[in-house]
Image (cartoon, rainbow, N blue to C red; front, side):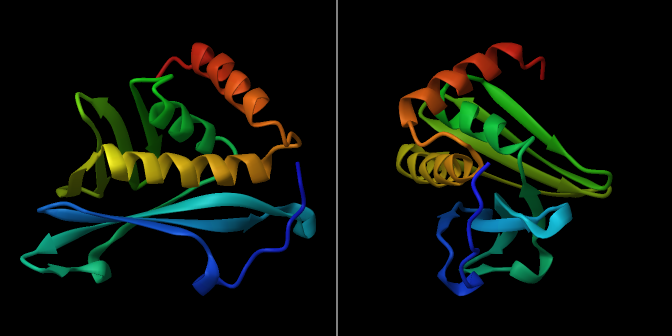
Length: 158
């Protein structure tokens, strides 16, 4: 695992995707582990859209760390058809569909937002997720990272 100095939050890489009923912001971030070593992570923020306005004050936020980030990468790369990221009161599902990735977020009872990510947005989300995963890794070889992701996908039971 590489140790890196986290950037100021305003300077961290982001991907924004806008659907007709919801929006997604994926933001590079870091989790500070025990011992103070920062670990690259990815925040997913999904918020409802009302007309032209995105209601970010109603967003659902999930942070993907070392257990979740490889699964997101596997879906973006086509190694897995679907992955679910669950927390006690909320969750996000990401699923490959023809011509897009579909992302749905839920929290509590009755609160849920979803949006399709067309190819260009799926690419940007996958690239950001892979960049964060590479920062977590002890490996600088992209081909090795891809090979290990394929192996990990074969173990996933969903």
